[in-house]
Image (cartoon, rainbow, N blue to C red; front, side, top):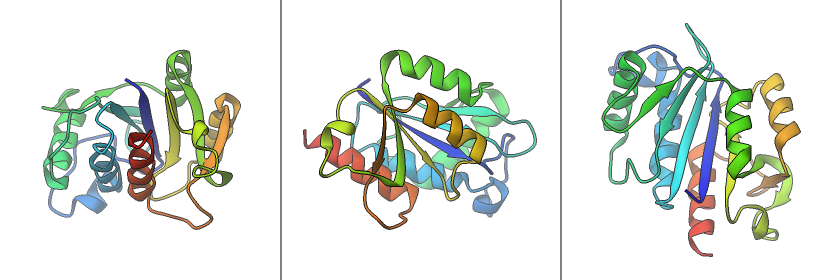
Length: 182
């Protein structure tokens, strides 16, 4: 695995959810599903979603590299719900794991990079996002302050894809494309 995207979801459900109206019932895991789809531009990248929503946080949703290419959002949402119920779905699986443990094992193989608007420009400093990087970002909301503080302690760099706020899946798509060009 060359790279990883880590989405910290402050509201992501930690229990199965109804597929009807899934954006609300899942705590906006639809944002995570779109990030997983966007990451398929870079087939060697895994996606980890740290779910901090009710009722039993934290949970780590894992999308292994290349697992979900060609899937639609609804298919991923159904698999997320299955994985939250059983521990694994057809493509995804769930671990009882928190941020500090995730940062600890990811930092053994990857440089940790924090994605935020005030970071260094990824286009000007491509080396900050190329290679074995684990890139952390919020979902539809910023990371909670305590999570952000912890990621900052591990981060080798703070990187931006531009001065404007973008949707998380657009950030992942842009970086996956940029990394695939190297």
